Length: 298
Length: 338
Image (tube, rainbow over all chains, first blue to last red; front, side, top):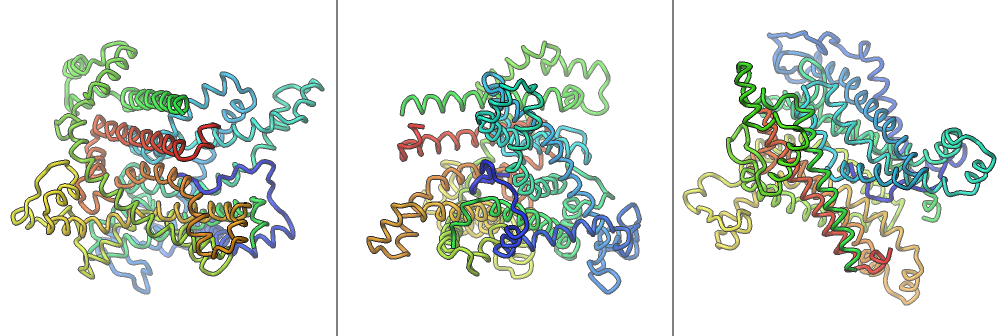
């Protein structure tokens, strides 16, 4: 995803606490809405077996006599093309795309952050090589590269996760590199060197913690983007396979019956949208909280 | 300026080389055994070996990479397994429809989002600002394949306001056939004065274009807001206020003028993204562009076609960025002095 509006590279920004945090939340109700929605999604994912009216329908169960039933008191979201309860599958779906997003972002950080620190701290040819490689990755729109990779890998959720991770880390490398380069040039890092502190210790104790705040904002902004990418790939048939209750896959499966049975497509799609929306609200709100220029505005 | 342009062109060329290597790696290393795919699922070992020799896969990787490079540069992008046509000619047939779709979508996005961003920036924190911000975040949170299905259901299946699928209604094919000049249907229809056809295509392009416009519109509205808010604090804008210009002119004419540069850069970036987003939309609306071609290639595991489209869009993306960089440097001397 692109995050063109005011990138989060504010040097030395820290998350506000206490009163400042409360004021920030009051000024930006959207952040609060996003936070509560994400909390709700987490609760739904964790307690899925208790909340789903028909937990077995998230798996291999089929009900040939209850196919494509419209929403009713028994099946609030209706039933799908093999008679499974759509509500139960949407609830269990909260365990799939969000989890994929967490794994993708962790992998992207694990690859991207060390490379970014290395490029920013050491500079020179290390920097050149790493940044030219990220340039190539960033020359593909991320969905495109993920799609090409997922299309040639064997179809599975694991392949999908790998494909998205591969396209995501260069953003973090670039972000962290800028931060690390500015931190590495500051006098206290020179003092550390003069004191003879080992290089790895300077990096781990000083450069990393002072470079990482913008990354937190970017990761929260990217959460929605990864969920959208993952569900798009699933929709194209490049991710989870039936009977996995993946939201993107459910939309894809429902589209053949869509003109007569709107509910099969509509509810999983709303789940994707609400999840992406909630995370984007949080990311957007966090960026505002961290942006000192905001205090200048009325 | 010349030095700046030369530097940009060299960097872009390096990126293109990297992009070609990346598609090569995906095709030859990640994709399993292309010879086995080519020979089919029931091929004997001898047939696979013959396919391997035929495809040149028995040569050392470096030689293969060089011949792949040569092929790409000389216009030989391989044969599609599915259509049995050269991939490049398939892309040439499909690309105009997608480029038209994305262009119309970006025009819609700009027309809608720039005024909204300006309103948002003029009264920050107000009710309109909150609503527009929420709306623009919703725009970038939209699963567009789902939005495409919903709009199709509502506006064509239920309300019958707009056609559901295709590029124009089939009856026009006989009454007002489209003469092919440029391959771009909208341009061809305009050039030949084929107004019923032009109207038909515009009616068919509207729904898919609205769907593709959702993401860029959200992005542009947020960007305009952020840029204009950045600008209005600066001294020259306060000077304008002191000179007695009305707020409307301060925002619409002067602050927006400075915001256009980054917005143009974002539009160039988002052009490439929107081309990829057509993958999720075109098949639903049966729009005969790259997206439909790519989804068909994915369904038939047509690796040369998938990678051809990937390479093509990456090249468009690099070219769009290069053009915007150069245009910006030409318009704004601060950039080329950096």
